[in-house]
Image (tube, rainbow over all chains, first blue to last red; front, side):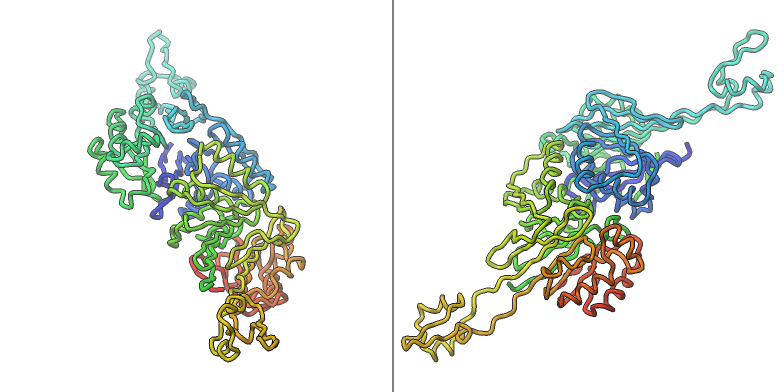
Length: 304
Length: 304
């Protein structure tokens, strides 16, 4: 993949305030546009930032609190009105299909495309999607209702042949596809030449983890370990720890700690409470634990 | 009532475009704030225009197409998070309560206030609310699914005593409350003095009619006759009449005709299709039939 980047469409927690919108992000994985969460107003945010809704083919919903999914029915209805024919895949918790169906029933909406719903598992990590370029794994978060995080991992592409080495070892041309697929080469004299010896060094694969709403909990750290970018909620400052625990949320201090312990490269914090007009203080607090921290700012693209 | 005015929060039809939002309006009737329709993003629009959501005690929903109600669940949830205790009355079509209940169920939401749902009747006009100052009547519109218009009518207040006349006819003071309530006065000599003779001229009562989504249809004209302000959808220009009929909508030309035939004072048009970046053309078309036509512009208050 060439492009692997995320656009923030919403950065607020439950009550949208100060012009901030509820959770939604676009992950661009080359030409694929993936929507992660879809708070109220997502279709308007897409339009504001020049994203054509019908280029989205996969939508991942973390949980069924309104600020993470209420924009879905409007977005799907608009996709339909705009003439969509392509299938749409929707991944989310049990009940999401029921919520959509009842609204389609009363609005007498017939979709002109196929909507595939894939129920996520809130109890254990699961690979729920993969194509040639990337794969998506869900993992359990600790929230008041069932909630999953998402791990998007770039897949290693085929290796690139090192032309000089191939000449040196006199590898016949018909073996090259096998070597690209990481098979070693056995020379006529019986010697084994490892595929790494015959190919150029590979670019490391990139990964993005999304932790929408959760208490800080060590159980999900294995899934976000060493990711290139971790989006983690940081609803409150740490002086509100009690409130964070009561409401199953994380403080900025905790988000920084999590990024530190998980050895991620970059931390992006969001889901800011309506109590903070200025959000720089949240970044300052998280940065003390993990210096490479950024605020999720609506309308900004972050390269992974 | 002193204040009787409407604030436009959304002016777009089904697909929000060009920064326009789906249908929603605030009607201010003195200190009462009434929400009429509640498209996606209404809570953000309220915040943008400085309206405190918890000052709203009555919400009227015309029909169950998403662009008229999808903001409701987010708004009600935010009212709850902001600590609402006061009852909220919600008027809308059959099914709206079911749509809300299923979403409260999956989000595990318990409201800390009482939400009274009043089902509207799509088949016949009905008085559904009145207080001392105004009353609200629903009336059937012709849309693809059950849909009602709303007529908000100021009630005549008590008459004001004309002090000079009361002296002249020597009306005993204990009769004054009866005269204020428009009872005639019988003098000791048997003469009847009409209450109008004893009071100051009354200010005419004002009325506002809201026709959200409908085909132009003579059946609802009696309900909007001679209103001070008619809000009427004008989704398309008249060259799209066939499309308007197919989708159960009105053209700007038809909206102008309706205002003309109904002898309203002012016409406010809205629900503009996403096909019109510039909406002035819709006003021009309607104005040819009815000169006192205004565009519903988001963020503007219109005095009734």
